[in-house]
Length: 348
Image (cartoon, rainbow, N blue to C red; front, top):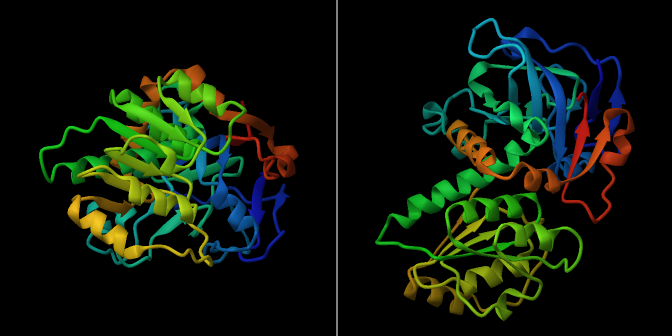
């Protein structure tokens, strides 16, 4: 079968292997036909050789962690042939740590978790894959064209879940939300905020293209200036760019009792001349909270599936700006600077 693979840690090793072995039954009872995989910055970093870990005994890493497929067989009876599913990316560590022991593998404490297409587990960019039923999340049939967005939506669902938990520290009635960055994570974060009836603002540096209209369709306000130029202090901020300057700016802009969730991953290696003392003073005196969030557990994946089910499917479909057949895979993994989400299609 076909698989998109890399030699882990070797830049420029991306290739299509047409003779990749069928998934071994030990990978899981559920056999899935791959429909599509989404492509994100993590994939580009793995292709650049910045990280990625080959599964034990394998000579290459199948990439792809944003999945969508149809069940071919499930002898456990948990799923039925034809069911639409996505595979949960992270699996718990073998120890397990206290969090992995209670199915909170997204909060793994010792770093020994594994991840499909990233760390020691084969990814979903292959014609067929297997997964244990516990890590297969069902989707409604009407999400067949957009279900590949479930993985980024799960990241957003976790972020909102933890925002809610932090907000319960006191009487809290948030009204305004700032989302920094209008990539897939940012737009999905704005979607969930709009579903909650909040006043939503999205900040992005791109003044043209589809992003302003997508934000407007949510009833939200689109901004292209700087965080400092905004004329309000948000109750909730989701930072989805990882740009160091923006990270610092949103921390300084939070309103009283504000919560800032950082979902963007910075590359590091840069320093900024910054008044850390002033930030500390504001965080303390205003009871603000800044926290980071990554990955998701099954509960978050199910919350994400529900959020996608409530959304306008045409709006969700507009997030996917390019669909590329697997045989033309180099095109899919070549950034254009104009895409929101690129999807590599295995079957339709």
